[in-house]
Image (cartoon, rainbow, N blue to C red):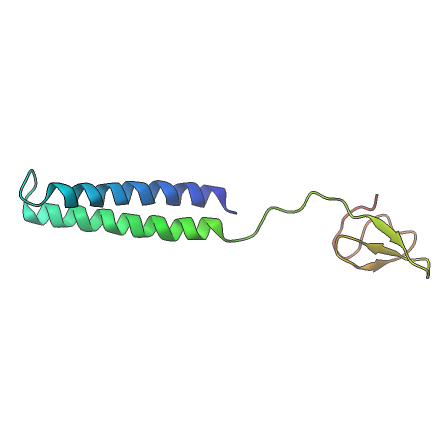
Length: 104
């Protein structure tokens, strides 16, 4: 999860939706001219759509790397199997040559 993008997306979503809803509830006949009203309402809607897209982007993506350490399983042939990536390693290996994780 991309936390910064998620936070920015939610702020944009709520700010844009709030602006658009406010402009739609007060109507074009109050404080603003019809051109300004349309601009503010459409701008708020566009900001809300941008917030939705940024939130979806923030929710997707790569996850944080796992903190678990690989566990060594002895093979009958004398080799080790990395439990993190499943690679068969030499018996004297200290780290997995495929994923670089250190054996316990």
